[in-house]
Length: 557
Image 1 (tube, rainbow, N blue to C red):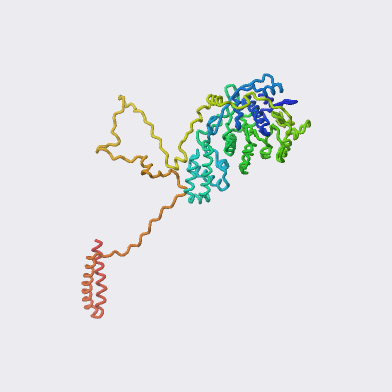
Image 2 (cartoon, helix red, strand yellow):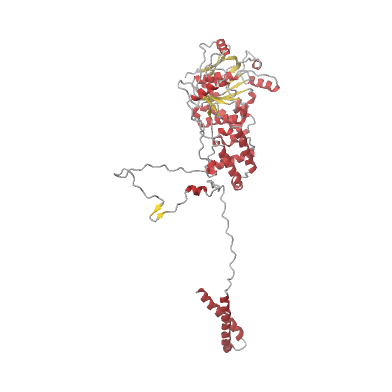
């Protein structure tokens, strides 16, 4: 491809081109409502497609779907083509792939909870710092336990488990508040009622399905149906930011190419930065700054340049500025900022021209062959070749049916993940039945003795693994999850020290009788040896000792 390969965007005294080799230096299309931003977006997107560059853009109002149908019959488009001297202008349809998070006006788009991550999920759920910390703990536990977080029910099940085991998790992760877990659960319920639950699941989107060309070499124009999605602005912004992050993380480094590999148009860009935490803003700035080396161009579409942070605005080398109405002090500041971002042109005052632009007219400044911004020019925008306006429902359905991705994402897949593990519903796959093998010269396997019988008759039926797993009726299965912290075994109750065993009646009588006889015998013997005075005491002690020895020997025997 030659160095002068470029997209014709508009003209006045001179033609204005967007050079493809600098198209990944990002860009901005700004202007008030009704000034022609959508038509400009369509013209540039068609130009990329004609050069084999796939693009992605969100269709907020439904107007961009007409790119899938041939145009050229619009009187204003014909008049503009004649005004700009475009020879052979005619309409044509461009290869279009329709997408829809809700699966109504295009192929469904899904991703998993794990791929979205805790930072974007926290912003989607509008969590504070404490609640975001608890959500980070949940994702950490999922990684440690090898649990798959694919859809909402997986995240809800793990949140419930964390709440039930909050006490044992404190020593490793810090305080886990059950109130914070409850808030996250309520936010998930709210998002589910808004239709956000359908965005999470499988089959997950494969980015290469967007980065493709048709057989004639035209790049696919991926259009996201965002009219209903805009009713949930945070879901819209989170999805587009996730898609941009996925492009950044998955695409390889390619350096400077002669044309981009993919171009991403971010309509209603102010939603991306509204109430965004500092960490998220830093992440956005990093992606915008570094994704250029991946061959991706990012173009922001917004009403007011002040909607974008200065650190992002400074990265946008290609600019289209439609009219701004300076009715309020903020609007006046916006006009001044927009004019100061252009390289000045001595022929006119940019700030004054911004307020005087008509519909379909804009200030343009693109990078030249050396990568330096051209001086700003006041131009009329070239007309698109596709239809200006929406496609009908029948035309959209026909495009979806003829899509190379038809049927690939239509049916959701619910495989075993965290929910099944935590609720004890994991099922083992049944072994595949093997056909009977041929045994020697015989054509079939000889009948074998059933495993339930033996040489002594029927064997008792062994409990099946399923019965062991399910337990008694009404009993909840034990979750297959490692405990957060093993509990020490309960100490056995200490036994009281054994007391002296009480004698039976017979033994007591025998002891008494024997003690008397032994005492008498010992006393008589003591009289003969020691005399009458000490005989009584000596006889009693000796008799008791003899008796205890004799009875102990008898009892042990």
